[in-house]
Amino acid sequence: MTVRRMDNVGIVFEDLEAAIAFFVELGLEVEGRAQVSGEFADQCVGLEGIRCDIAMLRTPDGHSRLELSRYVTPAVLEAPLKQPHNTVGMHRVMFAVDGLEDVIERLGKHGAELLGSIARYEDSYKLAYIRGPEGIIVGLAEQLA
Image 1 (tube, one colour):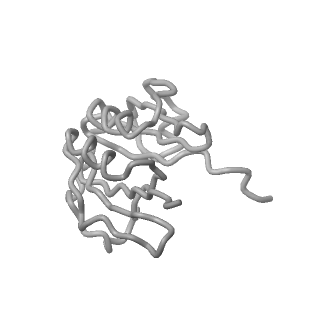
Image 2 (cartoon, one colour; image 1 turned 90 degrees about the vertical axis):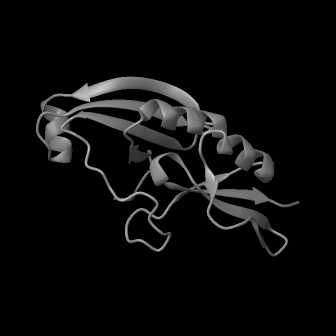
């Protein structure tokens, strides 16, 4: 048995609406929204009494998705915000973009902060890591010529 595809990456937020606005500004499209609850949800994630609002967003090419979630119950557990990039756990989410500087400026209106500076990898890419909603790290890569 082999993996057929990667279906989505899930990220939990306290402010779901702000997270949706950030990723829509980046260029993702809202595919759907729902509230998940019930025995199947409890069994799947190993928690009891789940009620979770979700939004599924897809990239413009239709190949990748983000599932953004906000737990109503049980209460969300807060993680330390603004962890450094070398923290064990989820590393980052990376997106290929056009117009890297413009994207960073637009996302700045949603609270994004550049972690370091825009870097150039040989003659192939311009890369930047930004701090996105609720402290997550988002990588941006613009392919050069």
